[in-house]
Image 1 (cartoon, rainbow, N blue to C red):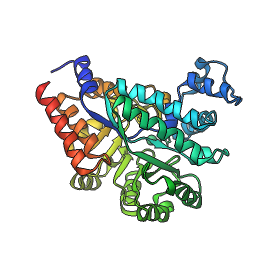
Image 2: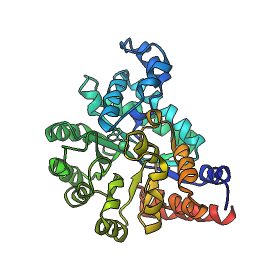
Image 3: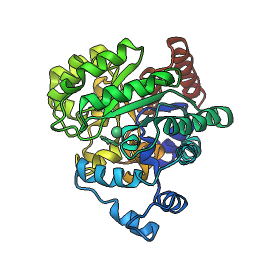
Length: 340
Ligand code: ADE
Ligand code: ZN
């Protein structure tokens, strides 16, 4: 049995990908105040401590309200660049080698920002991160599921000139009351335009929501998916289809899904053969970046060295890297564990 610090060190050094990370969710309280000041955006907070005190949530909607409020300080391409660059520095410190971040263009275009500024800022920082930090990336554009599907179709149109920068489309925001069927048309359209697809599901929605997300949206992976554990047939399907789940333990606890990480099904998911991965979701809001999520799972769920090996492999298997590169990254993971 290795101790928590030793295993967390291993988790930091092992090659791995982060696949569920909202760039807007990396807005630290200090950055919120800095962007508010440089853009002259009025905010109701006068100190980082005050902002932090507002980061107490009871459920997904109570978080989303604060998350969209915070996003309003982002105004220029430079803001999106600086936000992304700051996250990449944190990710590099946690040993992230490949990143597939989400962004929410509608949270910004509905405030009057230009789609082009949002994406230009993000992509310029991702390119610099690849050059300077060695972090490869594929970008995922999420539609806000509480807005009408027609808005999503319009946003898909905005993204067409950026097809070489945006690999996939996803679905986030309020899950309950906004079922996958609402977005079947825009997801079909996105696929016909060459985009891959992912979707949040089973975060607050039930296992049937996850099943319908697979059947109706034909996604390549499911973001969260923690509610599947109540449905043995669905679990068996996920295992046999090797359908990945991007799991975010600290997020699920912060938003009230589980009383503590000790109650989280991640370890069981791995033990039954689900292709689960560990991710941080909105680290500035949920009290931890990628390695903090690994540390909590090691400490509170007793993850072993074998679990870490599987998680590292899963993170590349679930990625949108081309097959040959995925194989090479998994071989790198195996070589790492063989010499550790
Ligand atoms: N947008 C940002 N974080 C989210 C989450 N955890 N669930 C749904 N939408 C989100
Ligand atoms: Zn998320």
